[in-house]
Image (cartoon, rainbow, N blue to C red; front, side, top):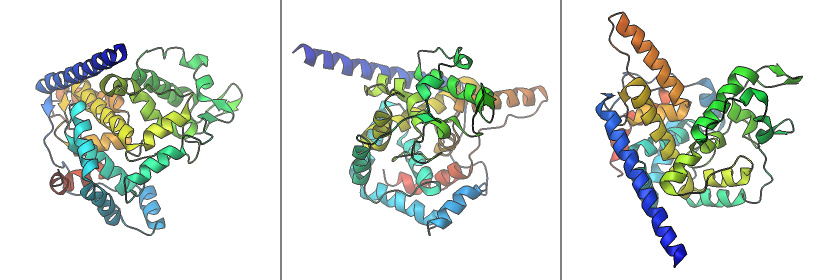
Length: 327
């Protein structure tokens, strides 16, 4: 009985937190300049050579990969329902989640034909021998180095964003204390035990991004907090669609909030822009850079530059009518 009552209180707390998030988003949007739906660019920006090469090596095309993920969405009513339900928890339009999934599976890894395959893959990670480390040093030990002394936030997003920033400024491509570190992303060096730089699951998410979103997902959805010392738990979460959709939604929500709070733009009506940020990451830093640029433009009497979609987000906006028709 006590356990049942505690469960009810937890559910009410999560519902309350979700409602607070929605109100916060609406409040921020009222004070921000709305970025309208659709593409700012008439033509699609160039697709990186690595994506083109990977697609050709797989004997396929971007259009074929898009059609494959579109078919997954079209043929799986339960998946569409999960997307809608998850989007509601985080106060975002379902098309933001759809855009992230479509962009990732068009330009990165092919979608599986059936959602069930993702569940099978998730189960496989439970027994795999995984570790988050580089050259024999676990990431938990690595972030105890003195360079990370200022990364003390109790919030997982702020904590891991700070650690990523320290990696870029103090370790990336450098030799520190007699040890050389690769000129590569923090996520690729420490968090990809199988394939450096590769992302995983329905949302093609990096373990580092999942760790950043851990607290927000715990607050909204009640899922256990992730721990870098438990890589199997992190990978299982990324691969299980029922779990990872929460992390996809949290990542998109974080980008929307960052651009409203920092840059003064409401991007909640443009899934192509949120998909772009899902693709390139670091929304706080990018929003701050846009704010600085627009402050300078204002000082020069020039109009502000709006957030823009990259090749990935451009496709999402271009296909939006077709994708919306599924829902």
